[in-house]
Length: 207
Picture 1: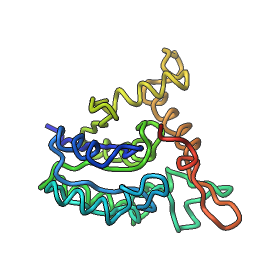
Picture 2: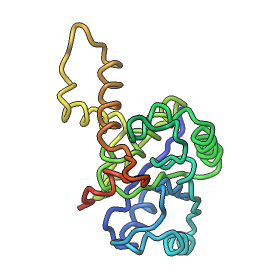
Picture 3: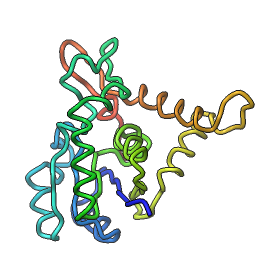
Picture 4: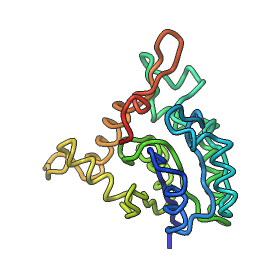
């Protein structure tokens, strides 16, 4: 039976609502995969405040933004100024982060946390969950209303959005799935601009 890992986006939730979502699904450890663990508009999710709130509920906190964040300091992970998820996923530091999640899942019920409300708009799904699925984890995305969207359901929704859900004699289901990942990854990837990395993810509203 594959182990289950949850993901969640903090969005604009009040901290008490966010904590209730975690408790509802019996999460005991949060892995923060934001490259920068601070929020200008939602300061309740700044690293120190979040860690304190989680601790008061008996939930562990670990920052994995350096390992599993969507922003990379490695120039080799960029093409034309944009992060390439397929390259980032093979880096030593990223694989190390996956290893930490795997090890943590042996003791805790883990949830990967990022900012975006919709899982298919976030690298926690398009990059990290894709790789965890290859390691035979079952991924469940906690939505803002507390309901669960399985990873399969999320990718099926993405394929429908990208019009890649129809049967094609010359394209296998796995190929269509990979294409959906790649298209969405290119859409949401961080970009360099004037030596500064920016994110199309952070520019989208989480409303």
